[in-house]
Image 1 (spheres, rainbow, N blue to C red):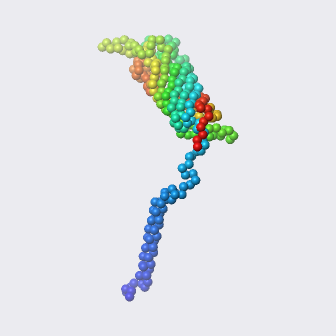
Image 2: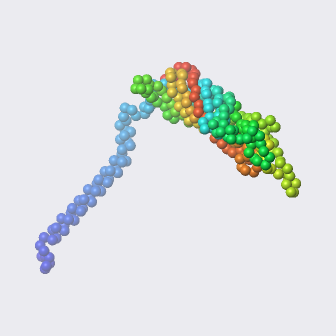
Image 3: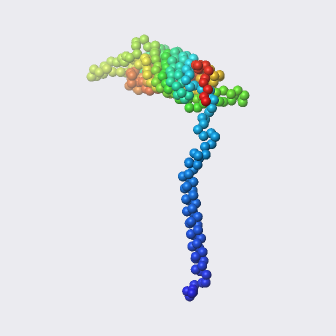
Length: 299
């Protein structure tokens, strides 16, 4: 019999709630077990049911415009934002494409130096002759210390991770690729200073008989010779046909240099200490010729 003071039917409601909770927990466990089995069996099911593109090449019957081909490119290069002298050069690039994405090659350029606007402005502000006690160089001293880059080149590896086709005005379609490269750089620099390049002339002796340096204008520029460094570049090819392409790129040749050939560190003399690791950024445009002229076709 129900306990005195307990409403009739309370025990039945409690039993119903317990049954509902039990059913919910059972359903939740069943769902979790089914989900776990689905995750475990999914790879096996997918492997058993291979689609029509399973294991296929991403591109079929592709023209191998780089693989196994030699690239030779007559090229023009010019510095971008040089300090004192623009290098205007002509030369060539030679590259062998080991794979569709990797190649090894080199560059060689010969040229001359052209004054920048900064050089012209500085020259106009300088006196015709130097004055004792004033470290300002004359026009001739300024010009004699500047260096130019008559020869430069590189040995590098090139990675070509991107290729495709692009449309010109919605009618003409051309193949293109984009590449990154890097490696060793070499550059020959020279100046017009008549007394050599490595001298640092003392301007007298101090009180204890040590050399005293007060006038860097009579010191050699210390900025001529053969310089080794590194280079990095990026560019793209636009293929005119199967064996001729337009090559556009930027390349940075980095090595120790002192373009002005004058005192940079403020110690009143010119020496190798005035050199620093500098960038020499070039823009290049060339016409790449690929050999053999007929590319292979992928399967």
